[in-house]
Amino acid sequence: MPPVRRSARVNEFAKKATRSCKSGESHTTTALSNDAKIYGYWLMKAEPESRIVKGKDVKFSIDDLYEMKDSTSCWDGVRNYEARNIMRDKMKIGDKVLFYHSNCKTPGIAGTATVVREAYPDYTAFDPEHPYYDPKSKADVPKWFMVDVKFESKFSNIIPLSALKGYQELKDMVLIKRGRLSVQPVKAGEYDFILKLGNK
Image (cartoon, rainbow, N blue to C red; front, side, top):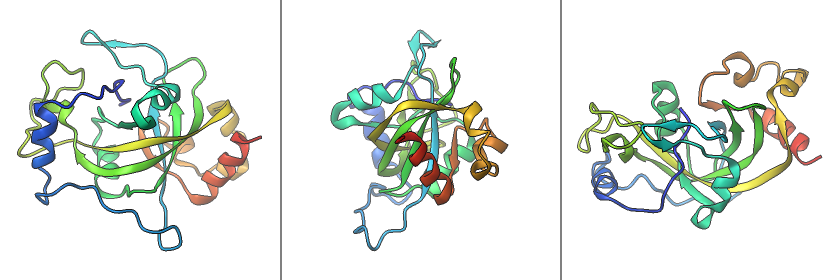
């Protein structure tokens, strides 16, 4: 699911979640130097147009990410197990992200971001007032996780899904074959090809 527009507030749920990581410590790690790090590549979906859920707007575009403090936000609200597992088990600091606008008039890739904090419990699942509250997720045994991402670039024009489907270089892309998954892997060659399209 797409994330809710984030606030900078730190509440009791966030504090409890930080203490309840499986390792007993923060999931944040120190990034390796560029020559020692093999980066992963991902595509993450968010909704750029207003949609009200439980009285709150879940809109979150690449412009919203840019406007956040330090142009950085947690990626909360994911309630799909496969997408959660990717964030929890595979995403690392420094990994590259294609920011995808979904559930809108022209779905497509709007720009790029970078993972700046590794997985930690999604404390929004503990909040009964949050649109993506899950009563089965507890602070001491969290069910859902999130990462933090930082704005990297905005393409001059969104690369629409309809155009992406026309490139032979992207024919095996997860986005083309399994479009509904909100967090999905991207091959390095696919990422580089899309980056060139976005920088034209």
